Length: 116
Image 1 (cartoon, helix red, strand yellow):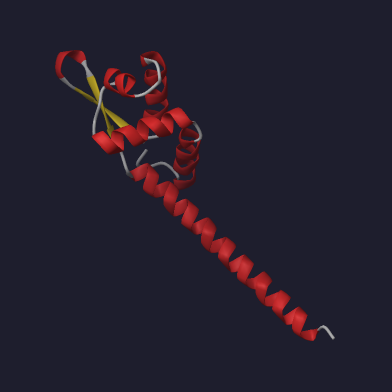
Image 2 (cartoon, helix red, strand yellow):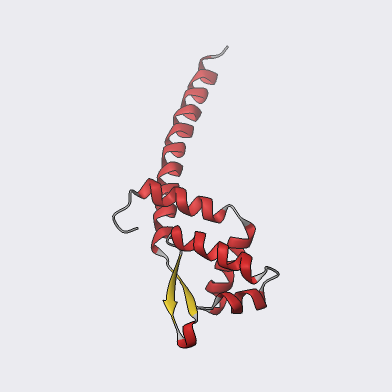
């Protein structure tokens, strides 16, 4: 995802974060570190099969990275870069809104001052 358009990264991150199960998986990885799908299924009220599907989507969004481990197991690690890109996207939107709201506020204040 390194050469991907920041807006495309943000869209993928927001789509991944739209599901509460995927947010729970990310929170678990953030709290306890890398884990296998089986580890996550043991810790969360989500089936192993559903965990695997969610991890595939999170991996596609670049939010987790699969790392081969012992005995054909795969550990999933968090990746922060896509989240940082999404945060930057939101910050830019917030700046645009702040400017627009400031302009509106200034206009309304001026309009109120000219009212009898």
